[in-house]
Image 1 (cartoon, rainbow, N blue to C red):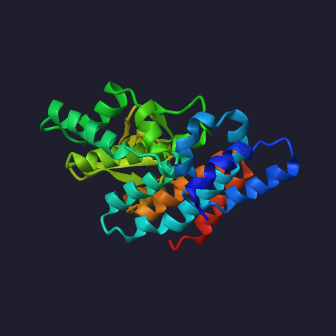
Image 2 (image 1 turned 180 degrees about the vertical axis):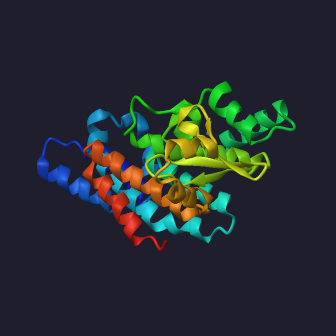
Length: 274
């Protein structure tokens, strides 16, 4: 049970030289509750590397429990874009700290405002060029399996991410600018989808916003063109996008040999009512 008045005592003794004392203190920290991460801020100056190494597993377990408990909140939002943004916000909070103020919505606002000021009559083509060429947001080709490549705040701050993360960025900035950008559940490489004169155009956000037209697709995938066009013309619901993000997270943590988080996201997929 949380009691900030006893936390100083727990912090002081968490790395005690006696194993019995350390184990008892860790039990107390485990039972402290979800406020632990926030309350520890008051003692940040006293948390050296060794103390943090002992406490961090408890903090991370609290974050997993917090995400599990709050995960369904995005599903109660009727607007697809707002629901998608909420799901991405929850992932940001899980990775960066549930007590941190996640300001990625403000970053999205900033990109949208800058775009609209520069291109008052800009369309989806202009926005793609603005984000992926002018702002140089690009695919994470060097460290592809970094779990933070699924983190939208990370993508906005460091201008890099997975195909689906950058597509979501394009969608959410576009929505703020009054433009219509959809996701396309393309096999193996998530893409954005826009329309021009009733023609569907795919946008590869991972590769500088490269445009892929239907005529090009015919030449690229002659044998499976009909099957691929069925995928392209179908609506990709928010749930499909979010589920694919969770799959990416599970795989990324597995690649980093973090079995606990990898299994956690697999379980989150299984327990979510899609």
